[in-house]
Amino acid sequence: MGESLEYASSLLRDPHHFHWYIVPLLALVIYVYAVEIERRNWKAVAAGLAFYGAEWFIEVVNALWLHFSGRAPLWGTPADSAYVILTGLNIEISFMFAIYGIIVAKVLSSVKNRFLVIIIFSFFCAAVETVLNYWGALTWDYWWWGWPHIWSVILFAYGPGTAIAVWAHDMKSNRLKWSLIVGTFAMDAALLWVGIGVLGWI
Image (tube, rainbow, N blue to C red):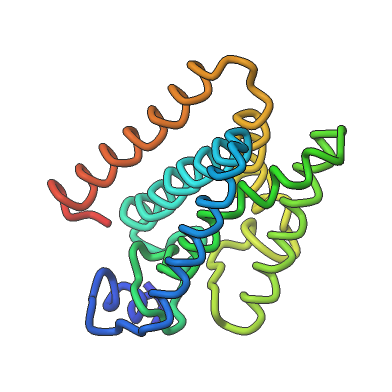
């Protein structure tokens, strides 16, 4: 494991790095959802929660990759954070992804080509990650993950999550839509309980 990842691992779930800025960030996330609930824009709420649930699943898989490979996660966040939840996920990223799906939903009302929306958002996020990697805020340790092979980031990280957000937004059956969201979070909770609570792997 590299020095930067050892540093990130040493920060895992350590509350001593708390910064007050995460409180207004949390308020912002709550406000965004409150606005959509006030407008009864349940499609946007569903898209936001669906992506967030999918993102947590991907982050847990990334942490498990680190454990079983014994080398490095697919991506890591060694830079300073108010709270590092998993090796590749900190509280700041988590708050951002909590509203990502709602941002996607806002575009869906104007753009009919869903595939284009998925590609553009996924490509943009991969481009942002490339800049963060260049700045040293985010690590890539495998030659096939990250620049210049950003297709891997698009195909396996942002593409699926964005597609699930779009799917949840457009799904006609409310019962199936909310079952998907609740089921995703239940699966995330089970993986976290086993990975952290029982085995202490991630």
